[in-house]
Length: 257
Image (cartoon, rainbow, N blue to C red; front, side, top):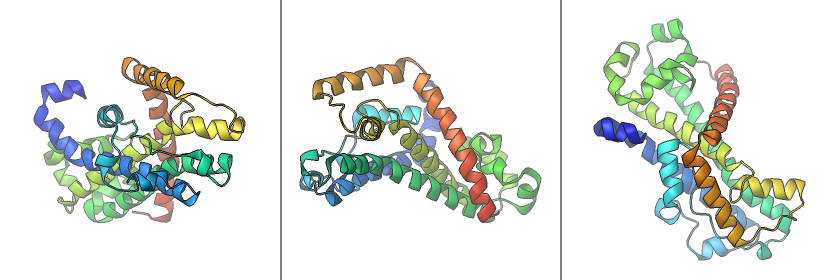
C-alpha cells in the first residue's frame, strides 16, 4: 500500500474513497457493540465516558486505524470496561468480548448479501451467464479484484448493465472485506485482542490475569509482528478466503443471481 501511495497517489486516493467509510464504520460499530454489551451486563463505564457512539473520532486508535487502511486488519481504541460491575464476571466478560467480532461478522454477511442483490441490476445477464456470479463476488476471483480499483472502469464497462452501481458495489465489497478481516484478526488469542479474553474465559475460566504493563508489552509485540512479518497477514488472509468461500455459495443458493 505504501509503495502504491508513492507511485500512484491519485489511484490510491480514489481507492480509499470506498475503503475509508468502510473502515470507519467497522471500527466504530465494533467498539459500540462492546460498550453496549457491557451496559447490558451492568457496566455503565462506556456510556459514562461517551463511548456509546457511532462517531469514529471517539474510537480510533492511530496505529490500529493505519493498519486497517494499509493492511486490512486492525483495531480501535478499546472501550473502557469495569468487570467489577458485571453481574456475572466470566460470562459477561465473554459476552462483551464477543460482541465486537459478532458485529463484524454480521456486517460481513450483510454486505455480502447486499452485493449479491446489487449484482442483479449491475451486471449484464450475458456476463453473469458466461462468467457466473462468483467471478464477480468471490474475493479470490479476477473479476472481484478488477472491480475494486476505479482505474478498471473502462475495462469493466462492457460487463455492466447499470454502470453507476459499481460505486455502490465497491463500497459493499470493502465493507465485507474490512469486517471479515477485522473480526478474524480480533479473534486471535493474543492480548489485548478479543480472542485472548475468549480463550481465557472458555479454557482458563478467567484465571489468566495479566497486568496493564504486560498488556502494553503484548501490544508492542503484536505491532512488531504485524509490521515486520507477514505471519499474521497470511493466517488472516487464508481464514478470510475460507470463511467467504463458505458463506458466499450459501447466500447465492438462497438468493440466486
